[in-house]
Image (cartoon, rainbow, N blue to C red; front, top):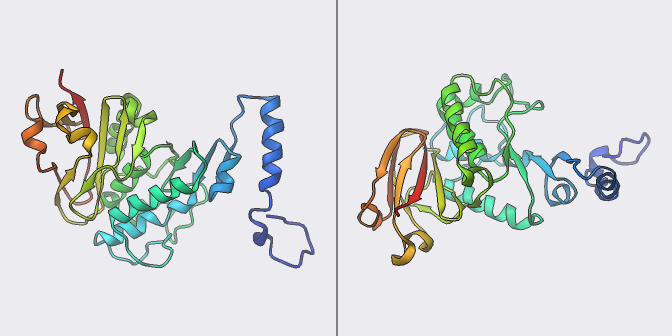
Length: 276
């Protein structure tokens, strides 16, 4: 914003007025120091164009909207845009359309809380939604393409969950630099979100339920995984340490979709590895 005194309009009315300034600044800064990274708090494609990384306030409405869609009460759920719930299917569609609106290669830092959080009566969102409903929100931030920006203290009550999930992000190449398809898998229950992370023939499916009750869902697999010539895979839930599909079981176990059972607000991380 332009904070010059005496302007006949609000400073916030010039929110994007600095876009050309940073376009010029980027060129000069990168010439002087090529390894410099420009990191912005910003919303929309204009912010993304001239910054290497930005943290995404426009995602904040997704958490209360999805939790409300799954049956959480609507009271004390800050960040909503219009007070309406959404399904996880709509969440996936929104992420897809947001990507289409941005320059190719845009990198976004996903977060639940930040230094600028403004939740009424609480510093952390976990104090508003509770530790259980916080888990799928954190899993969303930690398993999407881009990176995670975490405000220390937000993990209280879920420390072991966070440690296990971040360990998987570090050790699974497809989770930290693989492709991310928000819509490739189609759960047959509306409050389950399951993006597909892929790097070569390595695939991982983070599965998160925003439903306040236990659920069983089937993930309809894309042709790249379900076609007769796609090969066979084992499926291991690395977050919860359970084997879902062993060697030789792929075809029979996935003919009607990959079945996953989740508790209320449950999270699974399904690691698919080809059977040689």
